[in-house]
Image 1 (cartoon, rainbow, N blue to C red):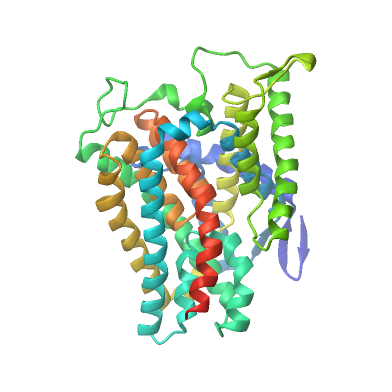
Image 2: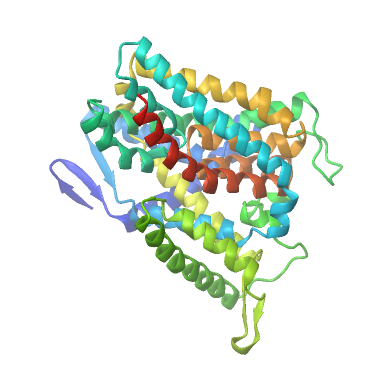
Length: 420
């Protein structure tokens, strides 16, 4: 750690270490506080938000500001989505057919509505119309990364003063809402409609302890049952396969960039993971290498990557920056939350069949339409750990939120900017 211009700079290695501690803190909090378990708040969210509040208190009392190195966190995000791609199969995609199309259409409708609502309320409040777009799909569905990428253009070409600060604050507020609302939404739907877990005789509301381990993660939803033993070479093989996908994903990202389209690194890595898992033979006999799709080793890596990523993302939230959202900006964000909630409850859940799977997807829908895809995954993982597995949810939602939506957002943002 170093002190630079009065700020405490925390290197990336130490940030990861603190993220792991935050995960343990979240697990302890969820174990002791019943309401966190009742409303299926993910463990990284419990620990991360508490640490963020402590850091905010230190800032307000002592003026201390901590800057965390995030390079390792961003790599964990790439690791996680690569495992999601590696666990997807074309057969699963066919099975998710109708639900995938319905969720994609509803998400596109929400994205259009978010931008139109933001622009309308911004104009009504006397703000530049581009400010409403900034507090639409740019900062909510796009998250911090998309906000940082587009903020300079909003400032220079659209005249939005402090575009970066406004966008980051909006993305942060959305992330908090996404983390806190997904679990309660699913819990309400499951209990309100007395939904049963497919293939289980368990009553709604009862715990599902066998899914509370690492195998309850998104990657584990498709893993074979039967107590497969994981050895050291299995783990190393999974890491090797992930690295192969990331290397090829980086090359694919550059090829896509050359044609004028920018995608975050995790998207091409997700694509490569899907392709390799479905096109390569399961076992390459000459080198005795088994492709690790749907194995305990890959599930463990996914669980660690997602948990650590989300813990680091939430513990570094600077709550004092939300002061910038006073007045009209806060009004726009509250309206965006209510819009997403109404579409979720009145359209997403019933049109996906009103089943237990639909309730789990609703938790994820709240996560990525207000925050980020990792938040959606964490929300769904927390729900399935409590109520039971949902293979369909973990097939359908990542494809919509991690693949199609980034492509659509890359088209929608310039379209709306051009027509302001």
